[in-house]
Image (tube, rainbow, N blue to C red; front, side, top):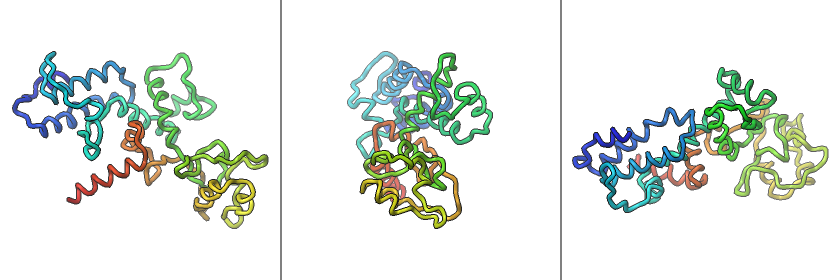
Length: 270
């Protein structure tokens, strides 16, 4: 990377030219390996430092004044930054996609090998790191928490979803039921009128608080007997998105993400 940076004639490049080269070349170089391995913090810091020196005009060991920290430079342009990637967060977002694949593509060769070695009696969500593990498994396992924080069940027949411990409702207060546990009610299917394909309103009113009632009754039920599906909470189609995972890893929320997307759409239209 540093060889490529030194090969660019920075005196002949405008700020826009430097921006394009950093985003299109330097930040793209480690993308493949970051999708499989967690890069050491020291390596990422060295890459960030090299990009910052190039951006502000430093050569080799020479350091010019950096008028803005690299962390702020990684913010979206609409929020005062330059839109560069924070490679540490981007690394986790890419590894999160591997977690998603292991969770949903269970017949793939990778999933079968990982399952046989690391979680033979469950899935990747319940897997432990273990002792004799490979560095690739350690890297993927480290991104599991990012994925788990943003999963939500899409209700079908309700036979796979635990009412009290699974994320299946959604509002500003979170994805979990907050009412006290009730004996005899375990699965979401227990709250349904199976014949009518509707929620059992009387049962829900008698055992759940007002917030939970509203969240449950707001979930539409299908008449086609669909199976429950574990989905990504921050995309319209329910599929894992590196873009939204990166935003969440940066400490943003869904509202911030939609704000950035809206502003970018306006710019494209303009």
